[in-house]
Image 1 (cartoon, rainbow over the protein chains, first blue to last red):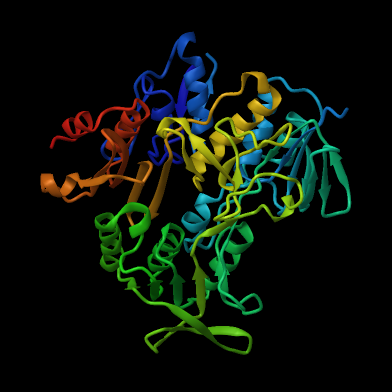
Image 2 (cartoon, each protein chain N blue to C red):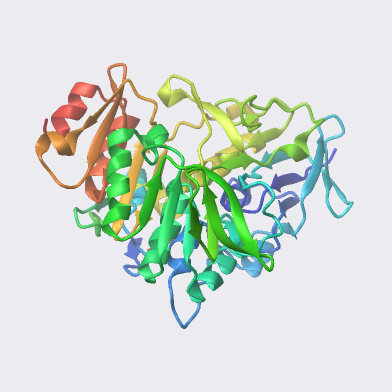
Length: 64
Length: 405
């Protein structure tokens, strides 16, 4: 599983960080840093919650 | 008995409710009732990107296609249909087309509608902004170069003003309070917000009351104020708060708040009527994270989270979970982003940025000995850190230490 960020859609609102702080972190300039773009099974639920919570639908999960 | 799950309200909370119902494995008949003709669409862009000038036209903000909703989620769509009544004994919902839906579980997500100025319904050029149709009309007026007057310096009104100024239109914002947003975020933050308007050439007038409108040929021409002046206007956008849409529930026995007639649900979003839950702007709920403080939130994230939760709880009431999220909203003014997490009711508000001598606004809210709120302008990294601290019930002392004061 890989996390893909659509940089045109992401505006750094940070809901992904709220749902999955181990995977995402908004930077000072408002850009999103993906801390781990290939999370293991243990983080799947958090990753899915982050995708669902994004107000701009900028996140998706791609199966490897 | 019917197995049908009915979601009343075709916006974000309603959409998340039907999505969640399928995700938890509900396979029975699922109906989404929406008063607007449009499929569920995203509202925050309507006062922002949607109002931008551009030859290519505004981007579509529809969440999911009809194929995705009908085909993949197997949702019966009743768009352009209002619910007109709910009979909890018969477990039936009445519809504006004369039809009825029996149900075993319901999520009410009928949201709220903007307050309007009295006696302006038939006047062209006067709008509120809630729906896509509102945004289309406002956009058209801005395309025509409207002198824009916004009534109410709250978040919606200020976003409209920002969008109009980006197009170079002359904009006046009229606010009854002496400082914008003073009741919701405090005086110093209100002043910081006012400064954004002034820095971008918006004529912000505080402490003024609108006494009426002038019109010619059925179109608005100006806004009259209690100081005797009239502000010329081709477009008037009214952003003075909302009213929950609960009139259709009259006679159902559902409990409503005496102040605004919003639904009163418990922490699990149950309304007290069997099988009936509520989500989003329409409902008050006691938030366990803030000692059961009753709140009704008009935020995107709240609608999304409660839509999902209400559906899960309605379908599995034996394991119902409370709504405990930290409230979060954002608002884009000019080139700045305002973000708020937590609750504004506070024993103390400390303006951290002032204490540190920093330009970008940051304030923390204390209730008792806890950090309960944080507001910032253009600090996107920090705000989510404070949100986490609020969620973890961190102490005021820890928050101040983290903030560096």
